[in-house]
Image 1 (cartoon, rainbow, N blue to C red):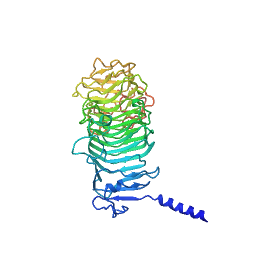
Image 2: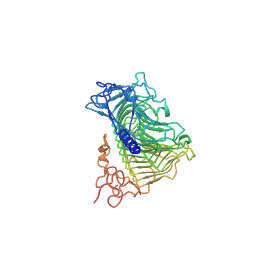
Image 3: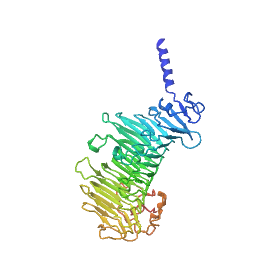
Image 4: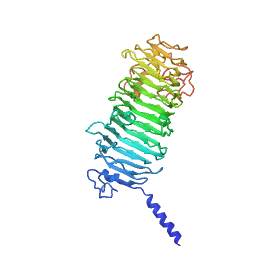
Amino acid sequence: MAMPLVVLILTLLWGCAAVAATYYVDAAKGDDANDGLTAESAWCSLEKLNATEFQPGDRILLRAGCAWTGQLWPKGSGEESSPIAVDSYGKGPKPTINGEGKTFEAVYLYNQRHWEISNLDVTNQSPEGPAPRAGVRILGEDAGTLSHIHLRHLEVHDVNGHLHDGKDSGKCNAAILFDVIGNAVPTSFHDVLIEGCRVHHCDRGGIKTWTTWGRYGGAEWVPYTNLVIGGNVLDDIGGDGIVACMADAPLIEHNVVSRCNARAGDWNVAIWVWECDDAVMQFNEAYLTQTDKDGQGFDIDGMCRGTVVQYNYSHDNEGGFILLCERGDPSPRRFNDQSVVRYNISQNDRARIFQVGGKVTNAEIYNNTIYIGDDRGDPPVIWHNKDGMWPDHIHYRNNVFYNLGDGGYDLGGSSNNVFDHNVFYGNHPETEPDDPHKLTSDPRLANPGSGGVGRDTADGYKLEPDSPCIDSGVTVPDCGGRDYWGNPVPSGRGTDRGAHERPQT
C-alpha cells in the first residue's frame, strides 16, 4: 500500500506546483511584509519584486498611477503555455519605472524565457547627462534559444543614452533593446513581439535588436527568429528609429516613425534592417528624418537577402526615401541581394529619393509612386554610388516619377540596369534613363502633393479614370497580389503603373 500513497503525495505536490499566483504591487499603500496576493495585501517595492523568483503562469500587477525609482528585474522563467506576465491594475496612468540613469536599463530580463510585459511607463534619464543606457533591455548570454518575450503597450521616453559612445558606436543605446552577448554557446531569441509601444525623446535609438552571433566579422550566424515589430509609434529619436539586426524573416509593419536623427547628426534612418534574410517592412509611415547622413525613411542595409519593402508611406525625409547599400567587398560574406521595393509612396523626400550604393545586386524596384514638388530643390531621383563596387542588375519597372524639381538621374558606373514601363513626368533632364516603354504624359493622379501625416492621407496618388497608367504596365511575377490600398493586382486587362491599381469591372 506504500506505492499508491507515494503516488498520491507526488500528485498533490505537482498539483500545488502548477497553481499560478497573481501578485499585486502598490507603491502608495503596499507593504513588503504582506503576501502580495490581493490588492489589499499588496507589496510595495521593486526590491521585493526583484528578490522573488516567479513561476510559470504568475502575474505581477503594478498599480496604475504609482511610480517606482530604480530597476525592475523580476526573476524566473515561464513555460510555453504559461508565460509570466507583468501588467497594471486599477485606474489611472500607466505605472512608472524610473531608472534615473543609475543602471544601464530601467526594465531588465537576463537569460529568461516566456515573459509578457505590458502597460508600463518607462524612463531612464540621468540628471548627470548622457551615458550608455537603455530603457528596456532584454539580454541573453550563452543560453541557447530564449523564447517568447512579448512587450506590449509600453511607453518609453526620456532615455538620455549617449549619442556616440557604447556598443555599435552608441546605436545600442536604445529605448527598447534586445541584446545577445557571449561567445561560448550560440544564443538567440525566438518569438519576440514588440507591439503597440510609444517611444519618444530617446537617445540614441528607438527599437533595436543586436547579437554577437552575426555575420559581421565572420561569426556563426544565429539569428533572431519570429521577430515582429508592429503598431508602434516613435517620435523625436536622437538616431535610428527601428532597426532589426541579425534576424531571419523579421516583420516590421504598421509603425509610425517621425523625427529621427534629431540629435546624433550621424548615419541614421527611420526604419531599416541589417544582416537579415527575408525581412518584410510594410504598412509603415516614416517622415521628417533629419540630415542627409543617411536621413532616409527606409534602408535595406548590408548582408541582407530577399528583403521586401512594400505599402509604405515616406514623406519629408531630408535624406530621401530609401537606401540600399553594402560595402564593396568581393568576399561572399558581404552582399545585398534580391531586394524588392514595391507599391510605396514617396512625397517630397529630399537629398536623393533612391540611393543604391556599393555591392547591391538583383534588386527589383517597381510600382512605386514618387512625387517631388517644385519647391524641393534638385534631389536626384535615382543615385547609384560606388562603395568599392558598383550596384549591378537593378531593375526599375512600372514606377511613376512625378518630378517637378530640378534633379536628375545618376547611375554612375553601375551596370545591367533595366528601366521598363516607367512614367517620367515633369522635369526631363538629359540624364533621364532610356526606357523602351516609357510614358512622359501626365499620369493623371487625383491630387499629387496633397498627402499629410498618416498613410490614409495618400489618396491623392490614386489614378483618375482617364489615366494613361491604367493597364499599361508590365506584369511582374510574384508582385504581392495587391496595391498600396489593398486593391487586387492586376485588375482589368493588365497591370497599372504606380502604387495604385485602379479597380475595374
